[in-house]
Image (cartoon, rainbow, N blue to C red; front, side, top):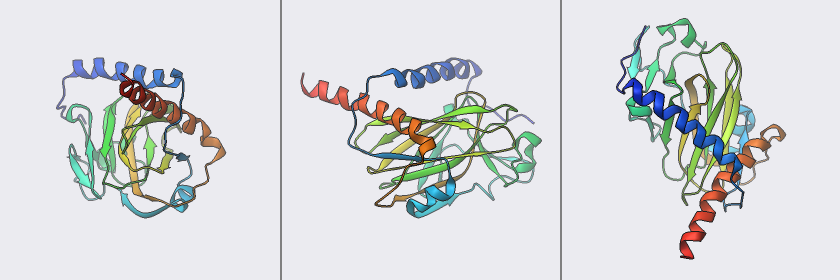
Length: 231
């Protein structure tokens, strides 16, 4: 079944490739380290061990059986969720076979779309299951903005359908927002965890690439701030 589209298709075709170009270009910006320390996780249990006071958003009970719920600007656990041009839905597992992940409802932002989450004040940890309905593995980007307006990008590969991939991170500074995007394929997320970071968080060796990418983005913003202050 098709979903109603609050956004023009022309806007979708133009914005998505440009956004992906900008995200990939951040990797080539010379890095100067920001004040925040970012630790990334691909293992949900290790992420949960590094966090406290968490809330889980599973999107259950919103969409009717076999249907969808229009989720633009919806708030869950104090976080506000937005899609590109208002295109954001919660889909019941019975909506179609490519949306059934064996865990109930999922959030869907379209092909190449983004889920932007504005987080409650003081949030220092966020994680989610990342999925794409495409039959091949893909890549997700997570752009984050911290309380001091520095930013960064974390990249996470995704497994093939029907498997899902977990990606999460903790920060020493509060996280203002994240934008989760399937760089290739359709963007679906589930089981979003929000909370605080424990005093000590040990990074996984497999996630060091994400840490480096985040430092580059944050460093670029910090450097621009210093340049403006010197003008």
